[in-house]
Image 1 (tube, helix red, strand yellow):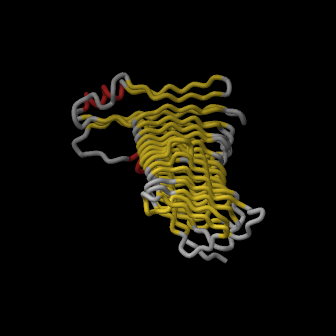
Image 2 (spheres, rainbow, N blue to C red):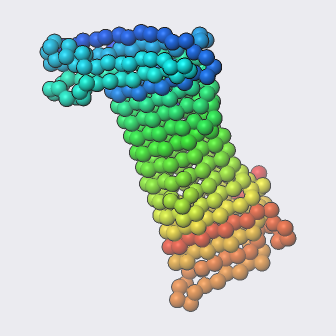
Length: 362
Protein backbone atom coordinates (compact mmCIF):
# COMPACT_ATOMS: atom_id res chain seq x y z
CA UNK A 1 0.00 0.00 0.00
CA UNK A 2 1.32 3.38 -0.93
CA UNK A 3 0.46 6.05 1.57
CA UNK A 4 0.56 9.64 0.46
CA UNK A 5 2.00 12.11 2.89
CA UNK A 6 1.90 15.87 2.70
CA UNK A 7 5.38 17.35 2.43
CA UNK A 8 6.18 19.00 5.72
CA UNK A 9 7.53 22.24 4.25
CA UNK A 10 4.51 22.82 2.06
CA UNK A 11 2.24 21.80 4.90
CA UNK A 12 3.73 24.39 7.25
CA UNK A 13 3.68 27.15 4.63
CA UNK A 14 0.03 26.56 3.80
CA UNK A 15 -0.72 26.34 7.47
CA UNK A 16 0.90 29.55 8.62
CA UNK A 17 0.33 31.69 5.55
CA UNK A 18 -3.25 30.63 4.80
CA UNK A 19 -5.63 32.35 2.43
CA UNK A 20 -6.55 35.91 3.22
CA UNK A 21 -9.41 37.70 1.51
CA UNK A 22 -8.40 41.19 0.42
CA UNK A 23 -11.33 42.62 2.38
CA UNK A 24 -10.46 40.74 5.59
CA UNK A 25 -8.94 42.52 8.56
CA UNK A 26 -6.33 40.26 10.12
CA UNK A 27 -4.70 40.36 13.54
CA UNK A 28 -1.89 37.95 14.49
CA UNK A 29 0.06 37.05 17.58
CA UNK A 30 3.05 34.69 17.73
CA UNK A 31 4.05 32.82 20.89
CA UNK A 32 7.47 31.20 21.21
CA UNK A 33 8.71 29.27 24.22
CA UNK A 34 11.06 26.43 25.18
CA UNK A 35 11.02 23.87 27.98
CA UNK A 36 13.76 21.50 29.12
CA UNK A 37 12.99 17.79 28.83
CA UNK A 38 14.14 14.42 30.14
CA UNK A 39 13.68 10.95 28.69
CA UNK A 40 10.40 10.73 30.64
CA UNK A 41 8.80 14.02 29.61
CA UNK A 42 5.09 14.01 28.74
CA UNK A 43 3.76 16.71 26.41
CA UNK A 44 0.03 17.36 26.57
CA UNK A 45 -1.63 19.62 23.97
CA UNK A 46 -5.31 20.61 23.86
CA UNK A 47 -6.18 22.73 20.82
CA UNK A 48 -9.08 23.77 18.59
CA UNK A 49 -9.34 25.35 15.16
CA UNK A 50 -5.79 24.78 14.00
CA UNK A 51 -3.12 22.35 12.90
CA UNK A 52 -0.48 20.66 15.04
CA UNK A 53 2.83 20.11 13.23
CA UNK A 54 5.29 18.12 15.33
CA UNK A 55 8.90 17.66 14.23
CA UNK A 56 11.61 15.65 15.93
CA UNK A 57 15.02 17.11 16.73
CA UNK A 58 18.13 16.18 18.76
CA UNK A 59 17.86 18.79 21.53
CA UNK A 60 16.71 17.99 25.08
CA UNK A 61 13.93 20.52 25.00
CA UNK A 62 10.52 21.21 23.52
CA UNK A 63 10.19 24.32 21.39
CA UNK A 64 6.84 25.96 20.62
CA UNK A 65 6.09 28.37 17.78
CA UNK A 66 2.38 29.17 17.98
CA UNK A 67 0.55 31.59 15.73
CA UNK A 68 -2.92 32.92 16.47
CA UNK A 69 -4.63 34.39 13.40
CA UNK A 70 -7.94 36.25 13.73
CA UNK A 71 -9.91 37.48 10.73
CA UNK A 72 -12.84 39.86 10.97
CA UNK A 73 -14.96 42.04 8.74
CA UNK A 74 -13.30 45.08 10.33
CA UNK A 75 -10.22 45.91 12.38
CA UNK A 76 -12.09 46.21 15.67
CA UNK A 77 -13.65 42.75 15.32
CA UNK A 78 -10.29 41.15 14.52
CA UNK A 79 -8.61 42.86 17.49
CA UNK A 80 -11.35 41.80 19.91
CA UNK A 81 -11.16 38.21 18.70
CA UNK A 82 -7.39 38.20 19.23
CA UNK A 83 -7.79 39.50 22.79
CA UNK A 84 -10.23 36.69 23.57
CA UNK A 85 -7.84 33.97 22.36
CA UNK A 86 -4.90 32.74 24.43
CA UNK A 87 -2.55 29.78 24.86
CA UNK A 88 -1.44 28.63 28.30
CA UNK A 89 2.03 27.05 28.38
CA UNK A 90 3.34 25.58 31.61
CA UNK A 91 5.59 22.85 33.00
CA UNK A 92 5.22 20.75 36.13
CA UNK A 93 8.02 18.27 36.79
CA UNK A 94 8.12 15.97 33.73
CA UNK A 95 4.86 17.28 32.28
CA UNK A 96 4.50 20.11 29.76
CA UNK A 97 1.03 21.51 29.05
CA UNK A 98 -0.20 23.62 26.13
CA UNK A 99 -3.87 24.61 26.19
CA UNK A 100 -5.73 26.86 23.77
CA UNK A 101 -8.41 28.99 25.42
CA UNK A 102 -11.24 31.02 23.89
CA UNK A 103 -13.18 33.53 25.99
CA UNK A 104 -16.02 33.03 23.49
CA UNK A 105 -16.47 30.72 20.54
CA UNK A 106 -14.26 31.72 17.58
CA UNK A 107 -17.32 31.48 15.35
CA UNK A 108 -19.55 33.53 17.63
CA UNK A 109 -18.86 36.75 15.76
CA UNK A 110 -20.45 37.95 12.54
CA UNK A 111 -20.32 35.98 9.33
CA UNK A 112 -16.86 35.80 7.79
CA UNK A 113 -14.94 36.02 11.07
CA UNK A 114 -12.61 33.21 12.08
CA UNK A 115 -9.80 32.30 14.46
CA UNK A 116 -7.09 29.70 13.91
CA UNK A 117 -4.45 28.60 16.40
CA UNK A 118 -1.54 26.83 14.74
CA UNK A 119 1.24 24.94 16.52
CA UNK A 120 4.71 24.13 15.19
CA UNK A 121 6.54 22.08 17.83
CA UNK A 122 10.05 20.62 17.90
CA UNK A 123 10.35 17.68 20.29
CA UNK A 124 12.87 14.95 21.13
CA UNK A 125 11.71 11.58 19.80
CA UNK A 126 11.71 10.24 23.36
CA UNK A 127 8.84 12.54 24.41
CA UNK A 128 5.50 11.01 25.36
CA UNK A 129 2.83 12.81 23.33
CA UNK A 130 -0.79 13.35 24.40
CA UNK A 131 -2.51 15.31 21.65
CA UNK A 132 -6.07 16.59 21.47
CA UNK A 133 -7.27 18.63 18.53
CA UNK A 134 -10.64 19.64 17.13
CA UNK A 135 -11.23 21.09 13.66
CA UNK A 136 -7.66 20.68 12.44
CA UNK A 137 -5.03 18.21 11.30
CA UNK A 138 -2.07 16.64 13.09
CA UNK A 139 1.24 15.97 11.33
CA UNK A 140 4.02 13.87 12.86
CA UNK A 141 7.16 12.23 11.54
CA UNK A 142 8.91 9.83 13.95
CA UNK A 143 7.87 9.06 17.54
CA UNK A 144 9.57 6.37 19.63
CA UNK A 145 7.34 6.47 22.73
CA UNK A 146 3.65 5.53 23.04
CA UNK A 147 1.34 8.26 21.78
CA UNK A 148 -2.23 9.21 22.65
CA UNK A 149 -4.31 11.21 20.16
CA UNK A 150 -7.89 12.42 20.36
CA UNK A 151 -8.97 14.08 17.13
CA UNK A 152 -12.30 15.38 15.88
CA UNK A 153 -12.92 16.77 12.39
CA UNK A 154 -9.33 16.44 11.23
CA UNK A 155 -6.69 14.13 9.76
CA UNK A 156 -3.53 12.50 11.10
CA UNK A 157 -0.45 12.11 8.90
CA UNK A 158 2.47 10.20 10.41
CA UNK A 159 5.57 8.39 9.20
CA UNK A 160 6.54 6.12 12.11
CA UNK A 161 4.78 5.72 15.46
CA UNK A 162 7.07 3.08 16.90
CA UNK A 163 5.99 3.14 20.53
CA UNK A 164 3.78 0.30 21.74
CA UNK A 165 0.24 0.70 23.05
CA UNK A 166 -0.56 3.75 20.95
CA UNK A 167 -4.11 4.96 21.59
CA UNK A 168 -5.87 6.95 18.88
CA UNK A 169 -9.46 8.17 18.70
CA UNK A 170 -10.81 9.88 15.56
CA UNK A 171 -14.25 11.27 14.79
CA UNK A 172 -14.75 12.46 11.22
CA UNK A 173 -11.24 12.16 9.86
CA UNK A 174 -8.46 10.17 8.20
CA UNK A 175 -5.33 8.60 9.63
CA UNK A 176 -2.37 7.72 7.40
CA UNK A 177 0.62 5.97 8.98
CA UNK A 178 3.48 4.17 7.28
CA UNK A 179 4.56 2.10 10.29
CA UNK A 180 3.27 1.82 13.83
CA UNK A 181 3.75 -0.12 17.02
CA UNK A 182 0.73 -1.80 18.57
CA UNK A 183 -2.33 0.43 18.42
CA UNK A 184 -5.80 0.80 19.85
CA UNK A 185 -7.91 2.66 17.28
CA UNK A 186 -11.40 4.00 17.91
CA UNK A 187 -12.88 5.57 14.80
CA UNK A 188 -16.23 7.03 13.80
CA UNK A 189 -16.89 8.08 10.23
CA UNK A 190 -13.32 7.91 9.06
CA UNK A 191 -10.65 6.11 7.09
CA UNK A 192 -7.45 4.48 8.36
CA UNK A 193 -4.51 3.63 6.11
CA UNK A 194 -1.79 1.96 8.17
CA UNK A 195 0.78 0.14 6.10
CA UNK A 196 2.14 -2.18 8.80
CA UNK A 197 1.84 -2.76 12.52
CA UNK A 198 2.15 -5.73 14.90
CA UNK A 199 -1.16 -5.56 16.77
CA UNK A 200 -4.33 -3.56 16.21
CA UNK A 201 -7.41 -3.33 18.41
CA UNK A 202 -10.19 -1.70 16.39
CA UNK A 203 -13.56 -0.21 17.17
CA UNK A 204 -15.17 1.29 14.08
CA UNK A 205 -18.41 2.94 13.00
CA UNK A 206 -18.68 3.92 9.34
CA UNK A 207 -14.97 3.15 9.13
CA UNK A 208 -12.65 1.99 6.33
CA UNK A 209 -9.39 0.25 7.27
CA UNK A 210 -6.63 -0.49 4.75
CA UNK A 211 -3.42 -2.24 5.81
CA UNK A 212 -0.69 -4.34 4.21
CA UNK A 213 0.69 -6.23 7.21
CA UNK A 214 -0.92 -6.88 10.60
CA UNK A 215 0.23 -9.58 12.97
CA UNK A 216 -2.81 -9.70 15.24
CA UNK A 217 -6.10 -7.91 14.58
CA UNK A 218 -8.74 -7.71 17.30
CA UNK A 219 -12.01 -6.09 16.31
CA UNK A 220 -14.08 -5.13 19.33
CA UNK A 221 -17.02 -3.93 17.25
CA UNK A 222 -17.69 -2.54 13.78
CA UNK A 223 -20.78 -1.28 12.01
CA UNK A 224 -21.20 -0.08 8.42
CA UNK A 225 -17.47 -0.56 7.87
CA UNK A 226 -14.93 -1.91 5.38
CA UNK A 227 -11.71 -3.78 6.18
CA UNK A 228 -9.31 -4.43 3.31
CA UNK A 229 -6.19 -6.21 4.57
CA UNK A 230 -3.06 -7.73 3.09
CA UNK A 231 -1.22 -10.35 5.16
CA UNK A 232 -2.68 -11.08 8.59
CA UNK A 233 -1.57 -13.65 11.14
CA UNK A 234 -4.60 -13.85 13.43
CA UNK A 235 -8.00 -12.12 13.33
CA UNK A 236 -10.61 -11.99 16.07
CA UNK A 237 -14.02 -10.33 15.81
CA UNK A 238 -16.02 -9.65 18.96
CA UNK A 239 -19.76 -9.95 19.50
CA UNK A 240 -20.82 -6.82 17.63
CA UNK A 241 -19.96 -6.90 13.93
CA UNK A 242 -22.68 -5.66 11.59
CA UNK A 243 -22.83 -4.61 7.95
CA UNK A 244 -19.07 -4.93 7.57
CA UNK A 245 -17.05 -6.04 4.53
CA UNK A 246 -13.94 -8.07 5.44
CA UNK A 247 -11.43 -8.70 2.65
CA UNK A 248 -8.14 -10.46 3.49
CA UNK A 249 -5.51 -11.21 0.88
CA UNK A 250 -3.59 -13.78 2.96
CA UNK A 251 -4.39 -15.43 6.31
CA UNK A 252 -1.49 -17.10 8.09
CA UNK A 253 -2.94 -18.67 11.25
CA UNK A 254 -6.38 -18.03 12.65
CA UNK A 255 -9.70 -16.29 11.97
CA UNK A 256 -12.42 -16.08 14.61
CA UNK A 257 -15.71 -14.30 13.98
CA UNK A 258 -18.54 -14.43 16.48
CA UNK A 259 -22.01 -13.13 15.62
CA UNK A 260 -21.22 -11.56 12.28
CA UNK A 261 -24.44 -10.10 10.90
CA UNK A 262 -25.04 -8.85 7.35
CA UNK A 263 -21.33 -9.06 6.60
CA UNK A 264 -19.14 -10.43 3.82
CA UNK A 265 -15.95 -12.35 4.54
CA UNK A 266 -13.46 -13.05 1.77
CA UNK A 267 -10.05 -14.66 2.41
CA UNK A 268 -8.22 -15.01 -0.88
CA UNK A 269 -5.25 -17.15 0.22
CA UNK A 270 -4.92 -19.30 3.32
CA UNK A 271 -1.54 -20.59 4.47
CA UNK A 272 -1.18 -24.41 4.40
CA UNK A 273 -0.02 -24.06 8.02
CA UNK A 274 -3.12 -22.24 9.30
CA UNK A 275 -4.71 -23.53 12.51
CA UNK A 276 -8.40 -22.62 12.46
CA UNK A 277 -11.25 -20.63 10.95
CA UNK A 278 -14.31 -20.32 13.16
CA UNK A 279 -17.23 -18.17 11.99
CA UNK A 280 -20.70 -17.85 13.49
CA UNK A 281 -22.82 -15.56 11.32
CA UNK A 282 -26.23 -14.58 9.99
CA UNK A 283 -26.97 -13.23 6.52
CA UNK A 284 -23.21 -13.19 5.89
CA UNK A 285 -21.50 -14.51 2.76
CA UNK A 286 -18.20 -16.35 3.35
CA UNK A 287 -15.62 -17.09 0.62
CA UNK A 288 -12.38 -18.96 1.33
CA UNK A 289 -9.38 -19.80 -0.86
CA UNK A 290 -9.05 -23.49 0.04
CA UNK A 291 -7.47 -26.26 -2.07
CA UNK A 292 -6.50 -29.94 -1.84
CA UNK A 293 -3.09 -29.08 -0.35
CA UNK A 294 -4.74 -27.95 2.85
CA UNK A 295 -5.13 -30.50 5.63
CA UNK A 296 -8.21 -29.62 7.65
CA UNK A 297 -11.42 -30.85 9.17
CA UNK A 298 -14.50 -28.97 7.97
CA UNK A 299 -17.89 -28.38 9.55
CA UNK A 300 -20.07 -26.14 7.39
CA UNK A 301 -23.65 -25.11 8.09
CA UNK A 302 -25.73 -22.85 5.82
CA UNK A 303 -29.47 -23.09 6.58
CA UNK A 304 -31.53 -21.29 3.95
CA UNK A 305 -28.32 -20.71 2.04
CA UNK A 306 -25.88 -22.75 -0.02
CA UNK A 307 -22.49 -24.46 0.20
CA UNK A 308 -20.39 -24.28 -2.97
CA UNK A 309 -17.24 -26.42 -3.06
CA UNK A 310 -16.21 -25.86 -6.70
CA UNK A 311 -15.08 -29.46 -7.21
CA UNK A 312 -13.07 -29.64 -3.99
CA UNK A 313 -12.77 -33.25 -2.84
CA UNK A 314 -14.11 -33.85 0.66
CA UNK A 315 -13.05 -37.07 2.38
CA UNK A 316 -15.62 -38.84 4.57
CA UNK A 317 -18.11 -36.24 3.39
CA UNK A 318 -21.57 -36.02 4.89
CA UNK A 319 -24.21 -33.61 3.59
CA UNK A 320 -27.58 -33.18 5.24
CA UNK A 321 -30.72 -31.53 3.88
CA UNK A 322 -34.08 -30.52 5.21
CA UNK A 323 -37.01 -31.99 3.33
CA UNK A 324 -38.72 -28.61 3.45
CA UNK A 325 -35.68 -26.81 2.04
CA UNK A 326 -33.80 -27.96 -1.09
CA UNK A 327 -30.60 -26.22 -0.05
CA UNK A 328 -27.92 -28.11 1.89
CA UNK A 329 -27.91 -27.42 5.59
CA UNK A 330 -24.61 -28.98 6.57
CA UNK A 331 -21.43 -30.45 5.13
CA UNK A 332 -18.78 -32.17 7.23
CA UNK A 333 -15.64 -34.07 6.37
CA UNK A 334 -11.94 -33.62 5.70
CA UNK A 335 -9.72 -31.96 3.14
CA UNK A 336 -6.45 -33.82 2.86
CA UNK A 337 -5.68 -36.67 5.22
CA UNK A 338 -8.36 -37.77 7.65
CA UNK A 339 -6.07 -38.70 10.54
CA UNK A 340 -4.66 -35.91 12.71
CA UNK A 341 -5.74 -32.99 10.52
CA UNK A 342 -3.60 -29.92 10.99
CA UNK A 343 -6.47 -27.43 11.12
CA UNK A 344 -10.21 -26.98 11.52
CA UNK A 345 -12.76 -24.91 9.61
CA UNK A 346 -16.13 -24.38 11.27
CA UNK A 347 -18.58 -22.00 9.62
CA UNK A 348 -22.23 -21.40 10.37
CA UNK A 349 -24.18 -18.78 8.42
CA UNK A 350 -27.84 -18.51 7.52
CA UNK A 351 -29.50 -17.05 4.42
CA UNK A 352 -26.10 -16.81 2.71
CA UNK A 353 -23.55 -18.86 0.77
CA UNK A 354 -20.33 -20.50 1.91
CA UNK A 355 -17.92 -20.80 -1.02
CA UNK A 356 -14.59 -22.65 -1.26
CA UNK A 357 -12.80 -21.22 -4.27
CA UNK A 358 -10.55 -24.29 -4.66
CA UNK A 359 -7.72 -21.82 -5.22
CA UNK A 360 -4.53 -23.45 -6.52
CA UNK A 361 -1.36 -22.06 -4.92
CA UNK A 362 2.31 -22.88 -5.27
